Image (cartoon, rainbow, N blue to C red):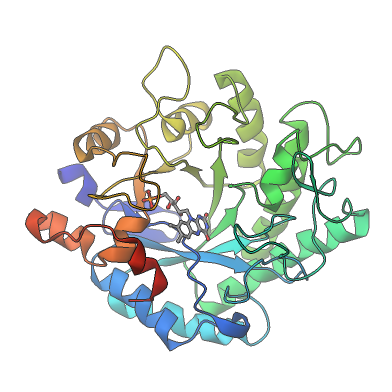
Length: 359
Ligand SMILES: Cc1cc2nc3c(=O)[nH]c(=O)nc-3n(C[C@H](O)[C@H](O)[C@H](O)COP(=O)(O)O)c2cc1C
């Protein structure tokens, strides 16, 4: 297990090991303000030896950027509260990245009518056939790009060590990527995935300008458009390269390749997973994720937990550089320390009840 506990550095970001806390919405920030309980929650994971913490999605300054009244924002007086969260996490021994989020037109599962304000989306669709609001105007697009840059600048002021842009999971940036939700014929749309990456490129450029060259900038992307993975954004290595290359060119330092199954091979003829292909095609370091460290998935019971041997084999082979854990770190803040010390019998199994509290 040596590779898992090797240090890692990227620009000004220094990790003591390869374990990342995946971004997870926890709805514990009423009024958009992350309070003491949020700071303590993240600090406990830092003290448990997580190498890098990525915050839950944090809303940018747009009326419809969030679909959950308990999600935090990254503007106005929330910034000073984030500064306290950052301080606690640093005291706990880990760097922390803010995940910048705009949900687009997507309603929150089970909650019907949200986003909280006027929805932003490329073509007025949250999902094929699900009309929500109007296509964004040029002015709305410009304002949204500026809001990403403002949030990034605020993250720098709050002391964050890096920024992650959420470009995955069917939210705003991903709605631009997907042909079924981006029907635009102007410069923000187009026939190819590379054409539809133009909005993400503009966001990345604006964020990069706001944070300068020394701060690490991550982009989270996902491939799946259906639960079984049969509909994906990029359907060949060539298409994936044409999608990711302009994003890297615009200023990304590391790609966070999201999917529920870490072990899934992305294309025929190779056992590389999504993070493996993204690294091979772009040359950038990558983060992998998906059902790692779970003894009892619970949340999505049909997905078996990833084999830790397979995760480490891929890491040691250099397929990806970091491995993110979500649910395992919700139930067990000390997961990395227990693994390092060989206390496997003490790992806590996942239970869905853990999602209800900020322990
Ligand atoms: C409660 C919960 C909230 C989540 N919220 C976010 C989020 O805000 N941003 C994001 O990019 N992914 C989010 N995810 C996805 C996780 O980051 C992660 O990719 C997913 O849980 C798979 O990792 P795991 O199998 O280790 O849990 C969330 C997952 C869970 C369980």
